[in-house]
Length: 343
Ligand code: KG4
Ligand code: ZN
Image 1 (tube, rainbow, N blue to C red):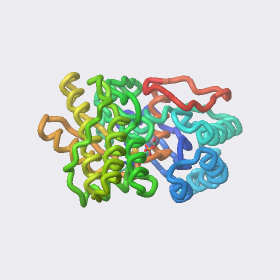
Image 2: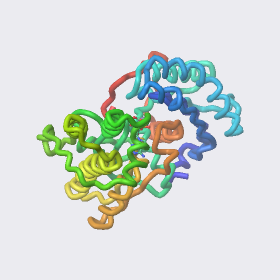
Image 3: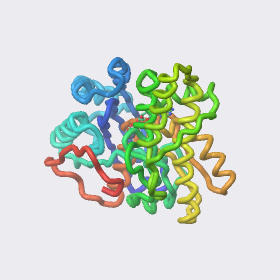
Image 4: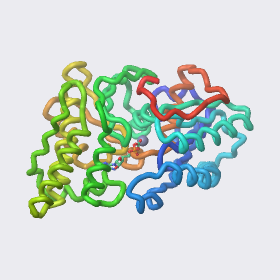
């Protein structure tokens, strides 16, 4: 249980997450996670090579009520015991988010309990409090997801400031786009991670787009890989896919790890946590752990189940909002496709 959870005794939070292709519902009682049910649509979207927003919304619609029921059952909690409902309202696919937001509003209204609107990236960062109970701000969060990338300074449980961001694509998006160019199945990130383990990082992919040193750019790196594949095809040369994966992965991760090391030096904060789906990447975990040893900072990784989208992190984020007395959302709450980390 987290350090200041005693302030929220008698709280039973039901959290909902539907921002992309996972329908997830979790129940947290007095800061303790009782259930975290995740219904993934990955198999449904695989045949299209990526998430199809309309199909995602429809599947969230069919999954949401059974997943709510299952989460309550697994937690051994009756819905009459719920004291707050929390939901991801952005960032993400609007149609997908709307399913969770509508369900959360209906539940909060019918039970007469407050509704908390949770920022998805703040929730990814908060997942670390579940995984590492001794973790306390200040720390730096390396955010690496399908929609966000960068280094965030976390000065308090409710204080998030972006230090470095990507100026174009997110790192997960780059993994998925490169995987697509290599004709690998969706989602591309885990596939590239697996193949990179059997490859050599021997190809230099130079991104011509990276001009601003305080920002990270992945679109240029993706183009460099696509050009490399195109040129090899034109010349009739064979390509070692595992080497391409290892080389791309190293360049993509080193860029983010470099920003993290720079942030440690600039801020003097010597604790780093990882957040977002790409936090599951084995090379990113190893690189940051190695850099931590070299430069003297501590790195915490959430377990794989808390890296990709889940509702446990939504409950945990809401707990901090409740503790600080943040006002609940109204029933006018809407889904938002883009949100800044501080919103
Ligand atoms: O955080 P997340 O579940 O969803 C968003 O909030 O965007 O992140 C999904 C992203 C996808 O781009 C997926 O390819 C990537 O995380 N991912 C990985 C790995 N596992 C998931 N990328 C690299 N290596 C992995 N092992
Ligand atoms: Zn996410």
